[in-house]
Length: 408
Ligand SMILES: Nc1ncnc2c1ncn2[C@@H]1O[C@H](COP(=O)(O)OP(=O)(O)OP(=O)(O)O)[C@@H](O)[C@H]1O
Ligand SMILES: [Mg+2]
Image (cartoon, rainbow, N blue to C red; front, side):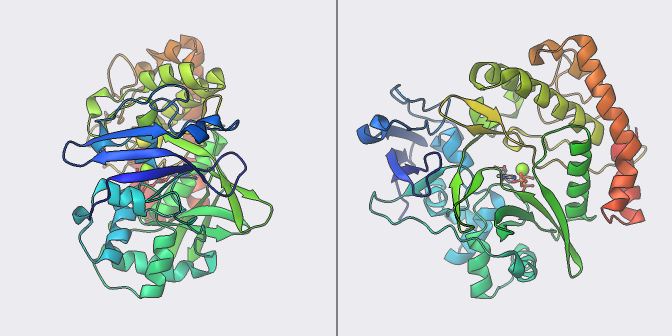
């Protein structure tokens, strides 16, 4: 039976047990959801808004009809293609057979952010016990097998599921390593080159360009490489087995867009939201501008609004550290014009520095500043990309395949 009523719990700052925040009611017939904060939650001195834009504290929440009736931060806390595939494997059904509410209610404690969704206020705290890194070889094999529709050992499947409630399409699992939580991104059977190493190299380059990159690692496991990125929404508390959580919203949620409404996605709208909601707007605007310039330089065309995140506090939001930046592969000779996933300037989504500079003022920058930032990033990437790729263990064939993404 599809669930229609869920109690939303929130992990308040520094706390490792969640408190009930209110009731979410979802009508699957109309695709409309509505939420009401509980009185006791609102009375808490340290209450946090569950969604900084759609569910501010002290305002009666409006029903939501976009994104199949899920508030933005709720949608972010639900798995996507990968997590759904893993969850459906337990139910022995196709992912399409489960509803949005099934996924929301059944995602586990490794979901992004500080929310949890339970059937009743008495439902026990879900255990936050993602697999240990030592299990990684089994997890990769199981993930590859699952992608092929194969049967996997039930013990490993459970471990994989315990770490698979984050969003995104690629095979992945949250793991524990050195007392921290990491998102481990695996190879996929659909990869034509070593994507974990490409993601690692690209994030290394981003760090060299001064972008805010979390701790990252690349580890070899038998014949596979795995990309590890530290979870920025979890804070290790007291002992290695406890983590407190930070609220998370994607830019899709901050701008209250529907995930199917691509025509409205725009960086300048995100910039406007940053001006209104960020704790440090000038720094966030500059960082976002640099990320766009970097996306142009490395040809990352998968920069959709769920690939930009914000951490949420009571006072406002702040741009999260960078994640999911990977060059899109192309062939030399097919033309140098390409498009980002969101509008960046007067020429729409056209991935060109001139186009980005046309909206420099939206990011609090002069034309000259905007142009200089883009030029510095371009130079750094052009000087370093080949060496960084080689140092990341990419084969000469993979480096050659990447060349048209960098050199235009
Ligand atoms: N370091 C991190 N800490 C916390 N949450 C993260 C981190 N990196 C990613 N996330 C969350 O996990 C989701 C999935 O991660 P990511 O975007 O890297 O996966 P993906 O499968 O490559 O995504 P896509 O489907 O966009 O290609 C993100 O949308 C974000 O909500
Ligand atoms: Mg992503």
